[in-house]
Length: 290
Length: 261
Ligand SMILES: Nc1ncnc2c1ncn2[C@@H]1O[C@H](COP(=O)(O)OP(=O)(O)O)[C@@H](O)[C@H]1O
Ligand SMILES: [Mg+2]
Picture 1 (cartoon, protein in one colour):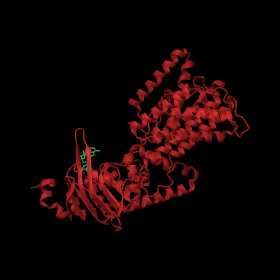
Picture 2 (cartoon, each protein chain N blue to C red; picture 1 turned 135 degrees about the vertical axis):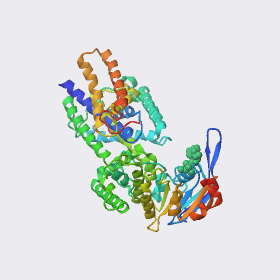
Picture 3 (cartoon, rainbow over the protein chains, first blue to last red; picture 1 turned 90 degrees about the vertical axis):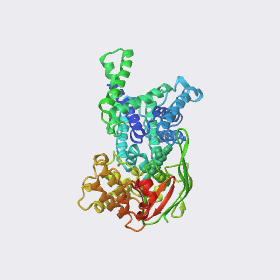
């Protein structure tokens, strides 16, 4: 039972991550490959605030999301104006820099040793959420709310502008909307919610180290997104389900870990290739890749 | 004069050498009229539109809109100042339905920030309904009370034929508060049955007496029919201007552009 709950908790965390990635990548045409950097920034900020202060969960969450969101401005305000290949390179650079800082700034992050003993979150400042059941309920409520929130956003006037930006940015600006403004917010919100995923992860596992927030992890998040499908809310959720459950099935089948790890990569790779040929909109997505 | 272009010069740098596409161009557009801009392929007509609407950097010269300089404003800001544009050959937003295509052109963009919707839902819903009403009014008044588009508000942009998408792209310009509309080849590639409708729409654009239309066209009968003024662009400058008849019947224009000797 606990094993299943653990998988569901990880699934909920990945739902946050993949849905967050969908906002820039699926809607605003910004291929971000630094989503794991935001996840990591959120986790490390959370470790700091949880270990130093006795704050209620909501307060920590708001602080961490805002700080992580602000970090996204480093990329948004780089002189590349959130465009095309330059943006991809800027996010790649950001991902590498964040990892390097987490890994080497040992005075603050303890580098490769990681940070152990991160306390659980406290719901109202007193009631400590602990144990697997507590986190199961917390993450289920959170991912449920975030799914609803992103659905709302997608069908809001803001979502309408993002969808338009994806197909024709020039026309959006000729109609009096500045695409950079909308993209900056999309990236900010995406970073914020990835930071929230970092908070949940750090306090649930109670130990973090830089290897959870690598370029590989960013690509993993994008893999889930492209398998599930971009543009809508169902695609990212089911994409997260696919990448979290597939390895468990392989383990269940009884393959040795070393084989399973390789097989998993092959399955993801093959799925992506098949998707390009058979379903360019992803398994459950709405928008066709170009 | 609603628009004055003074001494506009622009060089494009090609792979080997740079070439001068606009060379000290001067041009004034009369308020409340339809002016046609004609010229050969590649003569720089679209480039001139790009300069006016803020998409082209690196030119020299001045642009005055209602007597005020437009210098260094972003395309979005220029649109907000009242210059609307129909791009050459562009369809509707494919992933948005007809109604959203119209709403996105509204002059009122409040409510499009990500947080306003979550904080002030009621007000925004009211604004959205107002935009829907406006869109339906426009469609009804342009295409008749029983038109097909009002019944297809929720069809995606991609579900309309190219000609229909161009009609709707023109119609959505009525959603904004524009005083100058730049229309880049509105009839090109459109089924001839729609051309009369396009003519009606453009005439409606200036019907309020305040809006000005600047039109790029290759369809000469259309230009003679609809335009009040005509300007011929060649070699980086306006070479001739006047009434459509004066310009189109000019010997030099006939020779170099229309290919009639
Ligand atoms: N960004 C650019 N860089 C270099 N050359 C360009 C650029 N944009 C347009 N041109 C060239 O400038 C010329 C004028 O283009 P355009 O203004 O589109 O002509 P048209 O009068 O047919 O609308 C064309 O030869 C085109 O290839
Ligand atoms: Mg052109």
